[in-house]
Image (cartoon, rainbow, N blue to C red; front, side):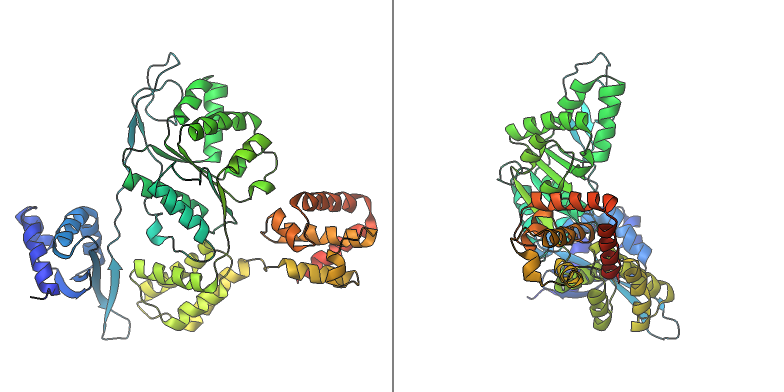
Length: 476
């Protein structure tokens, strides 16, 4: 006999009724109706948003067990919520929300040898003396692989992250350095790897920390309390260390020294290190070379601006998770017009959802244009390296081939250096990428060009005018 939504739900209810009090069952499960069964997804109708939130918060695990028993391991639950009528409409306003509850990432108990006289320490964020630690991973379970969608812009980094989660410390991606511009998902991916590892290996000690917080801990422990050994020894206990914004260690030589010892110990003992940065290793300044060389031991993966198709997938996923349906032309308009980063893309969608929810009306193209204009207006105009080379070449009355040539004629060299200077200043490309596109130079040549342009601007009035004129042309 083929399963139906009603039979599946009735069997689930029998199991649920046996595991909760009669009053709870009557209050929270009797009003629920089975609506649709498609593949391994069961849709149930609940009376309100509060009802849905209560079930997710208090009965998620029970529902999951019951549904898995009936449908199998890939079982999914979808809530359909009937709301009050839309303004000026006799139709019910409905929301469809997938079950997505994730519990807080569990803490990890660790014993640590005490080297100081202080008797106890509850967690790594209070130094000195450490004993019977309960380490909070500091992971956000909402940042997971389920909602980190794959596209051309992140495929390498995401695939490497999944491989690490399956075998932490056992791949060649150690360390994994994820780099890219703001709002492209570096922090999300770092958390997703940690969350996946904790789900697969509950006994692994995983710790997420920002480089800024790491530095503050170093100052508090090593300088103020003089317990550097405890500080370093604690971090050497971690199985998976995730450090966000590692570029913020720039110029902090003592902190880099401590991190160097921590990194070496973890790497030599098969522990996993994951780093994020807004710069590629080659572009990090005031980071010790011995540390930079270690950052390059594993894999450096860049997150780039998502293409149109990935942006559409992100929007559709966000709408699905929030239980909101939106016309295709609206999705298309937002995806085509917000290109800078994922954070702004999701911000626009949240604004549209808010307008739709509060007014109980459909989103139209006029509203979408208004919302999108608020985000686009705040975003700097994207300038490509090709555009920069074209503008600089035209300004100095030469063609792009001459600009990129190997000639050492002074006026051509200066034009090329200016193009490199603007490419570094106005794009998110790495020094290596800039050098490759402007005459197949290396990153050191680009760095030298930028320093030369900075120096000449302060000593040569005519040269300074060149830069000012080109700045104006490139910004318009």
